[in-house]
Amino acid sequence: MKRNSIVLVFALLLVMAGCSSKPATSLDGSGSTNDKPTKDEQTNESQTDHQDAEKTEVQLLDYFLPDGSSAHYKGEGNEFAELDITVNSPIEDYIVIHENNGGSFIQKVYKLQGDEIQVLQEEPVELNAGVPSKEELEALKPIRVYLKGPIEKGTTFDDWTIVKMDASVETPYQQFEDAIVIEKEDKDIINRIYLVKGFGEVKRESIMTSEEDFVVTSLLETVTQPE
Image (cartoon, rainbow, N blue to C red; front, side, top):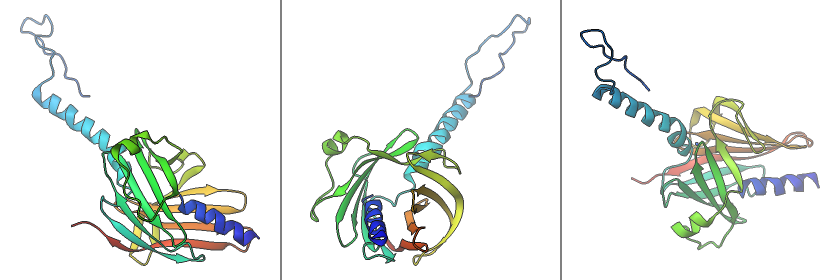
């Protein structure tokens, strides 16, 4: 009965980012003659703003495969752990993933909102379902948080926590040395997701601690990216 529980939980998991200048002084020492920032200072401020944006929005979106990519995951421990996904970004700040685990075809919709990635949809759809339209995407409401900044150990969101940075993880595709690990722990089950910039999820792991550490994993095996 307990092993059936982890199958259900794992299937649910599958269904499942100024500088200011010193005032110039006049020749008579009476004070500033021009307190407007110089051209160089304006350029530096613009670059700083851009860098700050990259630390939040761009960094979080990097934890997905690029638009138009597909991937296959080797499954171990459960028949539904093997899966295929496709990744699309139909409009700015939205990611749509279709995931086929052999038992169901899941549509997952994510949205970048400030310093977090929100899950807007995570449910079975028809095999021939296309990518939702702009109007359909914008009508969806958040149901939970998938990832949140800052990307550092200890950051929490919903029931998940970033528990490790720069983790080493071996997959059939390649060895990764810079994965972040997010973890959710329930009474008898620990769920972990390993994320790598440019690849997204490279490993999923569910451990049933009450049954001699029965483990179910999905491991990145192949990736196809648009040319």
